[in-house]
Length: 117
Image (cartoon, rainbow, N blue to C red; front, top):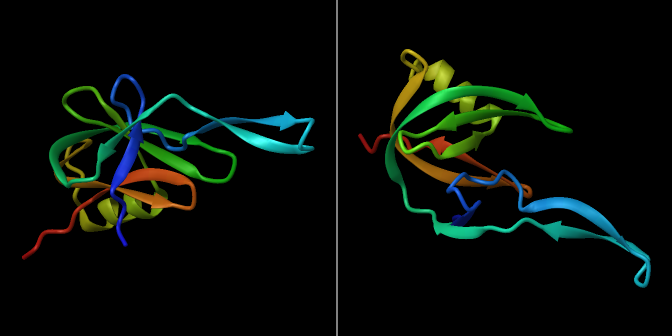
C-alpha cells in the first residue's frame, strides 16, 4: 500500500521526521516522542523544478535537500539521489519532473516519479 500523505511544517517544507525529540515519562518509566507541529498534504505526484540546496548528515544517514520554485524544501534519501546522478537527470543543479513522497522507516523524503514511457 502506498503512502497517502506526508507531513509539512507551517511554511510548507516537508518534514523528514515528525518526531522532534524524546522526553522521559517518569510515571510510565519510558521515553515518549514529542511530535512536531505539522499538517498532512496528499501524496499526489506533482510537477516541479527542484534545485539542489546541499546535504547534511543525520545521526545515521546523509540527507540531500531540494527546493522547489515556491521555496518549499524537501529532503531526499541517498538511494534516490544516487538514481538522479546515475540517470544524468541533474542539469545545472536542478531537475524538472514529477515528484512524490516516500517513507522509509519513520523518515520521509521525495523521489522523482519514473516516466510512464
